[in-house]
Length: 282
Image (cartoon, rainbow, N blue to C red; front, side, top):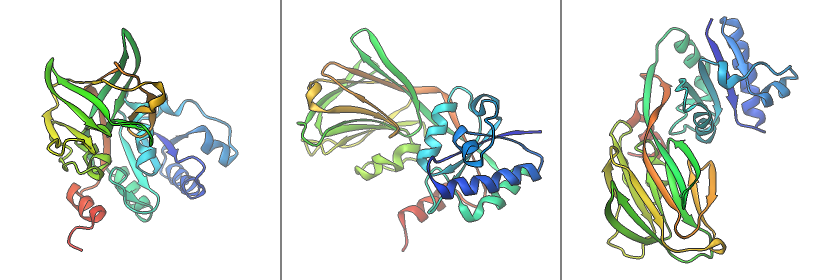
């Protein structure tokens, strides 16, 4: 019996209601279903064993943010995830609410594709101290608060100096994350299976500064050259975690040894999702 872990967006009644229907489907189809504590509370059930440690496959109900949260919890395990989007189609959560049970039946019968996505490892260093190390699927972002001045960010790769960006911030994106903040900031769309790292300055002071696409075998180091505690400069990882930055802080980004494993179905390919989300040909 496969053990399925059910997670959903917190404080979302529609996601919780759909979770109840998915739980019933799992029981009817002889899947052992574990769930997050807040779902168990909604169902007024006792908390089961650790969903993150025991589940072999995860169903994430919510949106792209929910799926990113699950991936952060699962990075070392590389357990496969089926993302279900509440509302309009997401870039990562490709299955819509209307398609849930068709997708679950396909999953049961093995009619799915394991889509392996590159992740990055991001480390924040302050002097000799490691403040945090995280594995991310979308992007590493250095940005300033509303009243902060332009930031100077020195960028090197494998000890080779690239440039110092003077900008409102800098996005370092995975190919998967190229359709997230990077796209909104004017960066290129990169197919998720291209082994690349995208550097995209946010509102650069020098207009000739443009996005740079590097091979992901290289390690990029960014050094915050200006700023103090009152300047409200932040490091944001996958839009999920934020850390205040100071002048001299270093952010090291390299390809992670972990991968994100997402389950998708042959009827919806990457470019079909792009056409739908970006409204091409409309």
